[in-house]
Length: 128
Length: 500
Image (cartoon, rainbow over all chains, first blue to last red; front, top):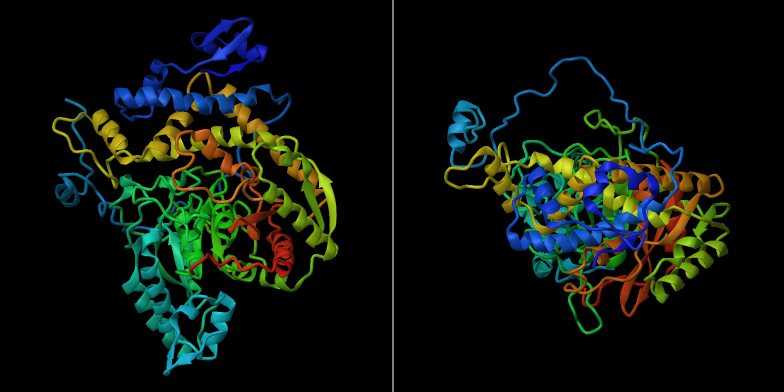
């Protein structure tokens, strides 16, 4: 059973929310659908069976219920915290310092020995 | 504490030594590195059923023991010479299989060493093996490993098998079972502190940026930190001094000197101001014994001359959902590299397209919890949701960090429990991910703010250990250890598991 929650008005108006919101008794219910789970698995390139997908809907719904709590927190004027340390990249001279690493030690698959020989990673054909 | 029988040593006694004691005995040639290492290898064998190790490195350890004995003979002892340690299987160890407890990396042999494991080896520690963990460090029970659960050396009142905590469960079990004198772990949302609390150990997560993340299999890059398990606060200080330090190869590594932490062992807590977040104690599900332990710890520190100051961390109650947005988001990005192309498991199916290879590889290679977190991460970062979830969570993260900053204007350290309960049974809490996530409720705030935090064993409940957590301001591991030592000095409980 999907958790009930009240959404902030700016989120309500966001067009991205429309496909996934059902307005019921003036409260907004957020539900994750099986289609959404299938779309997500496509995005992250993980294949699930039909059974796994159904079971995931329930488990994801629990987690989404948890993270929905954040919507009620006032964050006006607050900048996101992206890093707890100074995240500006250190630069150095453009010179090779670590070379000669064997990139093919762990190459997987039936084509592994060929890959090591020609020093190329071998994958299924992409371009005809 | 140990003595000869017919000219030999009682090997089991050597495993009960603290690091500082072992170093003294080695220096004075009362014990040899070979004896120290062999005693631990024997102990590893005795408690094999705990499944604390994924890849034991016995031959390597014995070779290193020989080298240590040569150095000791020449009076060239390094700071941690011959100390037998476990290394969480999240740290790349050159030419030694590193799996992150996943099928995805089950045959992965790194061609380089992580900075932190190199640092401690440079100081003379001897690796006994790669310890078991939750897959890709995602979990708080060590029940998601591809290589099977880790069982805690602690048992329930009726002898039930318990979890050691997670994700660094193998490291915790190894040290608590006397099969290692210390072990490296990693702490992203509590993965060193919580298992330390569950197994009666000292567990430390230093300030974000103190330890290099080079060579650590990445989970959530803005949260991951190397940490350590030991059986005393002084041992933790010794290990941390070796682990910490600037590394060019990690862009988030802080270029600041490593403090002298062992000096903190000799300082009382007199004059320190300890903040107690009363509002966090209103969380659901905290046991009576945990609350009693907290009060007792406050009383100890007060009697030792510290000032106790009430503080509030009003946004910390949102730490759990904030973490479960940010960590999976970063994980989904970090784990996108596992594609079957270069160094991972690869799905083998006739006539796969490239996309099918990716999908099958990742479906086969990842366990259920990892897939779930990748999905959550993909969800909160997906178009249309990123602002509502991820950016929102990052803003609340700043509020949580601000709460700590405000508190540290008034206090030197914050004191609260590490976990809301003692260790639970291995088969409990498996169905509801959120119930499992609640184990991290006290550890997550310090992770989000990047602050140094540690757990020390402080009480028992029905024969099981409970841990108190000390958090200090960024880079102030010194004060944190001072407070921990102050508690340790006054807690006269033997945290040895029954039967060990």
